[in-house]
Each structure stands twice: as structure tokens, then as C-alpha cells.
Length: 202
Image (cartoon, rainbow, N blue to C red; front, side, top):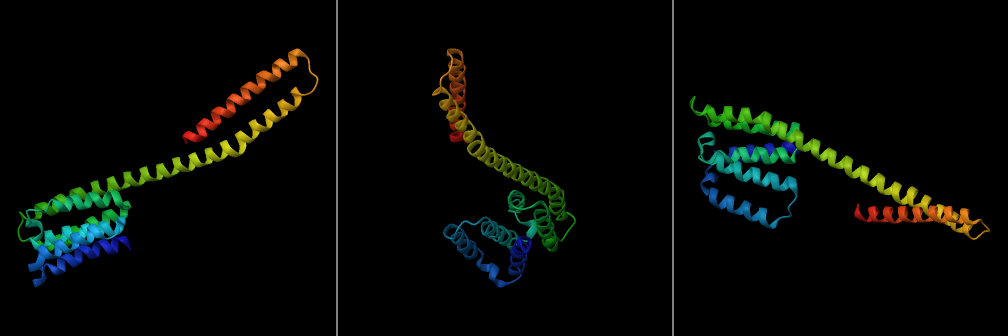
């Protein structure tokens, strides 16, 4: 679905460049920019809008011969950080294929070759971004599990231990037993305070 939407932005831009509508490019770009400013900033919608604007500019200026062709590189790298590796790779290839129609000499193939070289880099960046996102999710999950253990198991166990010690201290004991119980209670209280402080920091 995402690939289809992005590919449509490239295809629509290419088709518009073949019609008289392209004579109104400044107005079209201005209108799309206004939409970009005022519409909700959803990642996919934003990416599609940016793709449409950049492709319109490039295709309206003879594709690979456009002085603003370098904007395609920025578009592909933006896609790499936003999309899964397979989608960003496919989008890069679709864009390259559409731009092939604007080549008219061997010299004009150089930008196409540069895109083909950049495509694996786009895939690699997208893959690294996905791995980082998965690592962040695992860390967040582990933090949640630890927080649950801290609140449900550890704190409950320490509180129960303190209650038991308090009950024992109220019964007749030798001085040595009372001393040991006080040490246990102090250590357990210190652990409970540390656990509470750690829980607040997470």
C-alpha cells in the first residue's frame, strides 16, 4: 500500500509533465506547500506530499537534466528513514525507471547510474533504521517487564519481610536477636527506598 502510494506520486508527476498542466507548476507547488503546512502531519501523508512536490519539479525540468535533480537523492534518503527496506528499495527502483524516459544521450545516463549506486545505500540505511527501531521496542518491553517485577514482586516481598520483622520485634526476644532483627529491618527498608527511587527514575 505504501509503495503503491509513493509510486503513484512519481507516476502522476511524470504524466503531468507531459500535459499543459505543467505550465502552472509554480501554482501547483505553492498549493501543495500550503496543504503541507495546514494538513495534519501524518508521516505517510507528509512523505507522499514531499515526493509529489519533488517529482513534479524534477519531471517538469526534463527529469535527469534538471538542475534540481539532486533533490531526488534527498527524497530517497528521507524514504529510507521512514519505510521498511523492501519498500524504500522498490520506491528507489520505480523512481529510477520513470526517470529513464527523460534520458536522450549517454551523458544523461550518468544520473541514472548514480541512482542505481545509491539504491543499495538507501536499502542499507533503511535496514539499519529498522534494526534500531526494533532494538528500541525490545528495550522498552524489557523496561516494562522490569517495572512490573519491581512493583509486583520485589516491593511486595520486601514489604512482607518488614511486616514479619515488625511482628517478631513485638514478641519477647534476647538482645542479640533484637539486634539482628533491627539490622534486617534497616537493610530491607533501605532496599525498599532504593527500589522506589529506581521505579521513579524509569
